[in-house]
Length: 305
Image 1 (tube, one colour):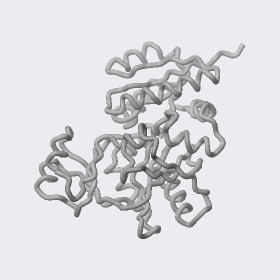
Image 2 (tube, rainbow, N blue to C red):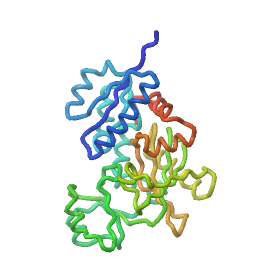
Image 3 (spheres, rainbow, N blue to C red):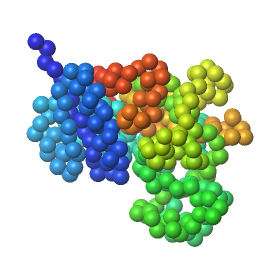
Image 4 (tube, helix red, strand yellow):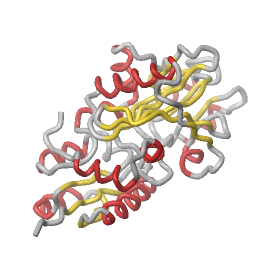
């Protein structure tokens, strides 16, 4: 009799994206059980490493459903590499680089990929002198799901925004007026492209997870030169960071000049709720949610770069 694999889903965590992680984990659990796996749910906290050392021989694969800091910034990946147990998604280096928006932007720019101009500044420096003409963007250096992202518009009280921010320094970027696109990749192979049209001007947390008014369009991979370039840059971004497994690359294309294609960020740990973008793209490509999760598990490995 073939032993059923035991998959430990890592969820929750210590970041602002705790609730998003739990939603991803819930969807993943249902899919894994439907595929016949034994499933353990592990709430990751400060005691996780002690638990993992004691229970590592009971687990075949760690499914990383964590989001945000500690879960996708290389820390959990480093711990799992040390334990020698296969885990899902990108390895330590790619996770660390992908989560650091400032550093990943420098790597992309060096590879010939256009990114919004920006810099990391302390809150005091932002208040003292605004670095860009309004509108501009303020966001955390290392966070996801659009947590803590603010668009500083003409009438925005920047002092009120700064007072809400807990971090000492933030990434400040020029604001690109344009259309949003995202690309899902499986080990560097493009699954599909999705155009995102939120009701508001910014695809924020609410638009991602709560709004029913966001419009999604699926352009053909060869429908235009612009889409071909988006695909080209998504592959390159994935390659230069050495990402593995499922990744997602987010773009903004200038309204006035379709040749101005900007990479906003790469997601080495994209959301896996039923409303998340990668499952939407996979479904459009003919891959069910259950089969997507099964593929991620079968792709799990250790000794990643």
